[in-house]
Image (cartoon, rainbow, N blue to C red):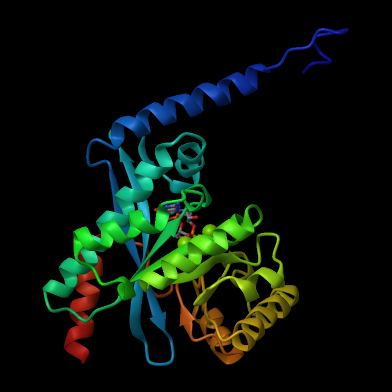
Amino acid sequence: QAKAAGGNTYRFFTPEMNLRISERVTLENNLRRALYGDEIFVHYQPQTDVRNGRLIGFEALVRWQHPELGNIPPTRFIPVAEESSLIYQVGERVLREACQQNRHWQDLGLPPVVVAVNLSAVQLRLPDLPQRVARILAETGLDARWLELEITESAFIHDTERIIDVLQQLRAIGIKLSVDDFGTGYSSLGYLKRLPFDRIKIDQSFVRDLPDGSDDVAIVRAIIAIAASLQKEVIAEGVEQEAQSEFLLQLGCELMQGYHFGKPASAASAEALLRGMAQQA
Ligand code: C2E
Ligand code: MG
Ligand code: MG
Ligand code: MG
């Protein structure tokens, strides 16, 4: 583009970049407004222990239903929220709603389960994050053992020492911690040993081509072995087919999440699953 402009003319923003920036600003303004209303809400995706088919918990996933633009996926608006300070509000909103909902299910006498909430790397940099999370638990009345926080692997690249400190404080409260999207970041096995994690989530990109993709088979096998030797739980994400599920189980991965077991769905759908579980017991 700079070349097409000829000679030494140098345009800082190409038209395409301008468009992207204005799109981002629009999205950001829309999001700021949306946070006042009820366009932002949470869906819940079941996590299953495949050995007995039991529901072990849910992952809370943020949803944004815009009145004109329709459903805007988190992969589009979370990065925008992370570039502004809106991620703090989005994060608190999801965390509070998930904790409130989980406590409500317990108050109904349904079997208690863990609800996992995604945490942005930006939120991890808040020095008072543990206090903020503790306050939300206190306000909603949820016991910390029913909350899990998922942190994507790439969040550990910078500020590792400070992050370890924050994670240790969260764990001291009694919250469970998991490494999300494991295998996609700049994995260093050293950090895994030092970070106080309970669970590793195998990224769905490694699950997709099972059981045929031979590289993926090798990677998944290695992740399961690492988890076992570090005495961490392991859960596979993005399990869509029975064949994938059987294969993972053979490799020793017993916990799974994916469309094969249930898509992310409303709190009411999640509640129906809990009721079904109560009847089984
Ligand atoms: P993630 O935390 O790795 O969440 C899993 C994503 O995979 C979700 O996409 C889920 O709907 C999708 N998924 C689950 N099972 C399957 C499957 O069998 N097949 C396929 N193809 N996909 C499956 P979603 O809800 O669009 O979220 C995308 C990402 O956005 C999340 O990845 C997470 O990184 C981020 N995200 C979602 N909610 C939040 C949130 O509340 N806070 C933050 N900070 N990030 C969030
Ligand atoms: Mg996640
Ligand atoms: Mg993931
Ligand atoms: Mg992901």
